[in-house]
Length: 419
Image 1: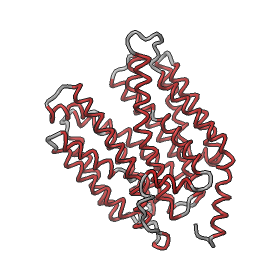
Image 2: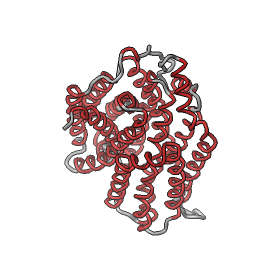
Image 3: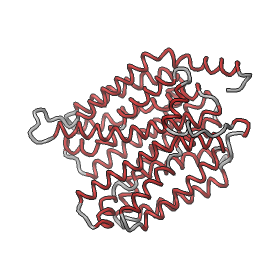
């Protein structure tokens, strides 16, 4: 294998493990919480929601911090330290005997897994500007595979013991740390680093700093509406397919795996062809339209075969995120890539907090006893409205997005080659 590709493999493994941390515990949490609290399933579900929320909140809060730290100290130490902390944290969770230790474990795991921004910054450092969106697609593919592998591994190992998935995760994270120690170079030269600033190393401060870049503020709004809409799939899928089609947990798992595989194929392979033919602006344009149409189709579907037909089609809409990342990355300076990706990661984590709350409420109100209109697909129709909002904002700011490369070039010329 070409040694030059090893750092990219490490980055993909890192984001895959980050994503696995979200889905890995889902199949075993009811049994594990019931074991440590000696309680019933209802109480276990309540605590499971708290643990998931804490994980997402930590990712939201610490993504800009780690992104800014990587702009100051480099990408390599942040990625390696985070992976080592994650490995140790999984060991703690594997032996946790109280709910409070599990809670601390999920808080630390959320902090350690907030390296998505640093991973994206590393890819931005080593990529030509014309290849950034394609390489961001590889990151998204690794993240998608984590969402596939997490529930699968958690479910299989959970049959052996509720704590087995955490042991496996600790081994994988530890092995990846060792791998990265030997193959991961530093991608950010010392002369391009900048001083660490706490005002910019938090979601609000980072958003204000990045928002000053030409056109970025509205593009961030596009991303937020898009991600809240897109998170309808993990938030509601199991409930929706059972209520609408009577699917068993096994069928739900197979369909989620099929969707995850389709997403990975699109972002690892098809996105390169699409971006080469369409360019980033048109890729976002048509991707948002496709996403909105598929969400409406999911919401109104009446037969199970329609879902299987929609899965690979809707997966093609995954081109939006890496194309948007490429557009915004072109507007940021070399010393701001970590900060930008930290803000984007925080928006993603914020979406993971907001979307499940909104989508499950829509599902409840349209499937509760005595409801006049029984519509399990209502969350997808709500998501379609949000996707339309994202499209509308992008349509209004499309000229700004097209001007981003020219703005970046002007900034570079004005600063004598430095951004």
